[in-house]
Amino acid sequence: MTTLRPFTCDDLFKFNNVNFDPLTETYGLSFYTQYLARWPEYFQLAESPSGQIMGYIMGKVEGHMENWHGHVTALTVSPDYRRLGLAALLMNFLEDVSEKKRAYFVDLFVRKSNQVAINMYQNLGYIIYRTILDYYAGDHDEDAYDMRKALSRDVEKKSIIPYTHPITTQQLHQANQIPSQTT
Image (cartoon, rainbow, N blue to C red; front, side, top):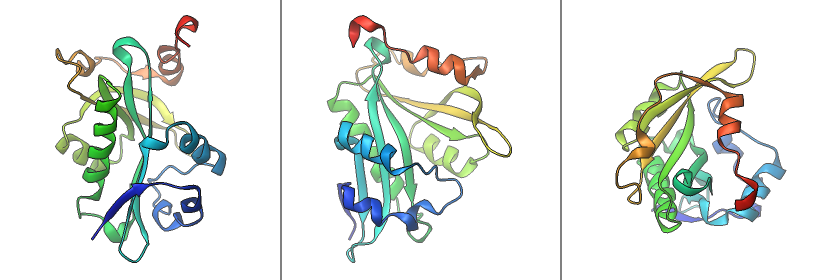
């Protein structure tokens, strides 16, 4: 039986089996601890009866006004535990937290080449909202899809009206700036 529980600092020393996947973005310890301190309710893991980490989700809530949303920073499931519905379970958890925070939508970024993940997210009700050029840096820069799912607060589904043209990472960061009077 799988247990969903909050991610803890101790888990940072036990989750390497999940992060070995080449499509999983890995970060420095300070990045994980920052999320754990600031958005602990968005950081959950799936654990096996033997205590092995099967997968985890890390996210946050951000934006302002109609751009107030939940964001999936990382979702990964160990190869040994794929195709069991764990990703859907973790995504549902994050969506529920976002609903409680009165978010308008949930978004995430995924590599354009990761068709398996794109199909999974589409099956969970996400749409491709826009393309972000050269979002993933590396030997070969790669574009990302910004995928979104409207939540109940977005009655008119404005948050999922797709862009018709790609944007740059600079445009993305400018669009996510919060005006100083709301901070």
